[in-house]
Length: 136
Image (cartoon, rainbow, N blue to C red):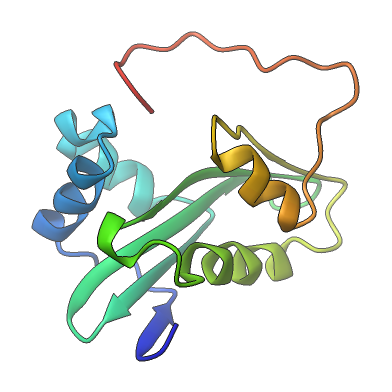
């Protein structure tokens, strides 16, 4: 993670956010106004920077007391595998260490990644959603 700086800023360049989401094929890039509102009003938001270039971000939604939901975690594909995503999640997890629940949806290859960070399947629960998008 050499030369990568983690910041808790809500000042994100819209064009770089959209580039990050598009590079990861997340359909929320097609709703830029809603996406930017979602990120800037999150309970917590951590971004990763290589100089002035946004290379990753993660955010949470929370009631501020008991439950934290890790909503988004993205790293530019060319920066993946360098520990950036893990560093973002760890910084967020520190904030919610004493919470009753820390929740996320892990899909595909991400499941193994999140297990390495201490997350586990939630008993007999099943993820459920009403989803209006193509991917993420």
